[in-house]
Length: 354
Image (cartoon, rainbow, N blue to C red; front, side, top):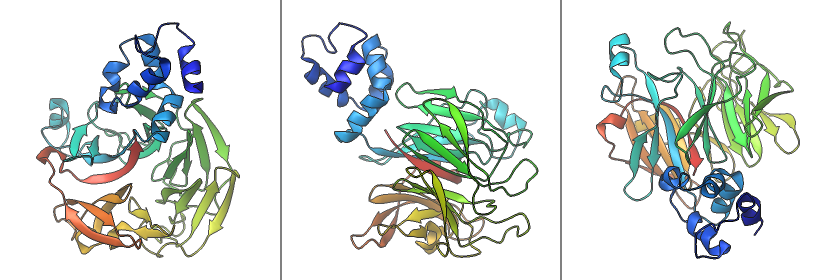
């Protein structure tokens, strides 16, 4: 197999002693991702194999990956360090992971080493080839915008720092496709709305500038439909807070932008609540049920969506699973049981296939 020959060329030892290469590969393909960090330390061949993008795509093609929800969530007192509890009464945020398989499990990822007491405020998440990418936001102490990029590898359970964003920006749209992460719109360090766009090549750890959007789009939201990156709504500097009903769409195949009008409810904030129906049209998770109309956030997990939000401003947040009906309509919200330490406010999130 091409995968075996490419990964196995560095050493002549068998992938699994006593087994043909094909059988050894299939054995490792079935190892759950939760055991990859330990398995990767067994030998050099396993380490190279488990970390490779070829192995990830092989697992995905053979049906041995699944989707988890990664959430930027306010940490409870139990999850905060003693330094953070003393430093400030304002909420700090970490990344929690919800695995919907079986009874559903929750875990808190280790903090980014540069920010041990909490993520940058309003940082953005994207999935990219089984890894989690964290970009931008505000320094949690000074509230100044940052250009930091961090990548979490679920295989090794470790963070690495990537090449900085080309410019400071916040409240931008983000989306990824085949190893590339697009960022567009948002606001610059002077809080002016932006129309600029960049793409980050995760494999090369390099940035490249794209042509500008059709207009400035502060507080826009990004979503991926097929091989297209949609930058939804937002507003210009002169029309602050007046959300647009249009979107700019970037084709990863064509490398071009196109504008689409009338795809979003004018005046409605799109942040964290843009969903995609089965017919490919955009929808707002805030409109799926009155229980999540305030502060809603949705993370699609196949036929189900994890939705968070509250019924009224200041009301407790609930976490729900939303089943998609066969006709493509939203079903009923089903509240899920969540451990106390994972009940904090969810600011944003994305799914990662691991």
